[in-house]
Length: 93
Image 1 (spheres, rainbow, N blue to C red):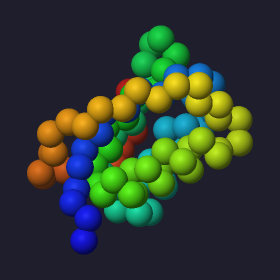
Image 2 (image 1 turned 90 degrees about the horizontal axis):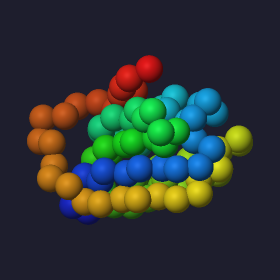
Image 3 (image 1 turned 180 degrees about the vertical axis):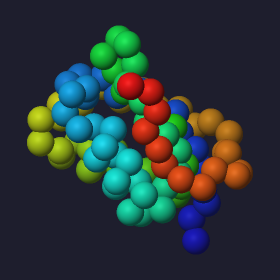
Image 4 (image 1 turned 180 degrees about the horizontal axis):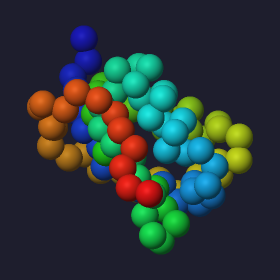
């Protein structure tokens, strides 16, 4: 069994107004990832996601294949786990 990790990710490009948060939430929930996703005022999308590295990589790859989404840059770093988190949610507006 793979070890859980948590990543903080900033997506830039055409990532707002294209269903990015909704699709990422649904995909994450379907594979058992936890965390959150939100739009930022500078046009980027911020995400914290927790699970195995393989599932997180799968989520990022899935989002890159979505219609209308054009990811130009991904800034990701590993951060400490949130041990009591139980769901993946959309935050913000």
